[in-house]
Length: 155
Image (cartoon, rainbow, N blue to C red):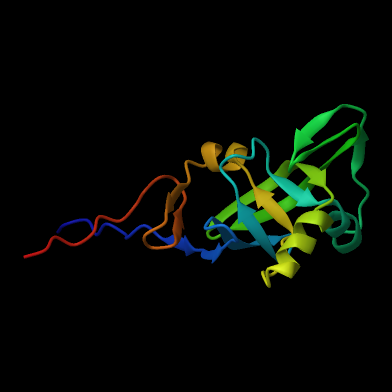
């Protein structure tokens, strides 16, 4: 009897068109049981969570690092770090994931002006690379582990 091969499961994401012809992809993830909206950003070297979300919703303080960091069009002298006890992206469950903390209020202010829903964090290339995530823009799907379903052959 032939072994049944399971179809790779993907996670749907949405794409919002930005002013000037660009696009931003967003995905829903779960952080410690709370549904969150994250920007998918392959150009971000590290995944981040909104500092306000972390401290108010997860009810923990972030650790302050006295080092200069650059990102999101600014340079700051202090940055923040924290650990997500549980991060779920589709069927992927990650425990004790170390993230940077950033005040995303300026990003969300810009999104509000464009009538785009606010974000709670950013999935960066650290997490995307470690878990071999494939971004399929044609299907608006994330495939974790790099397994993308083969499209049916046309007759």
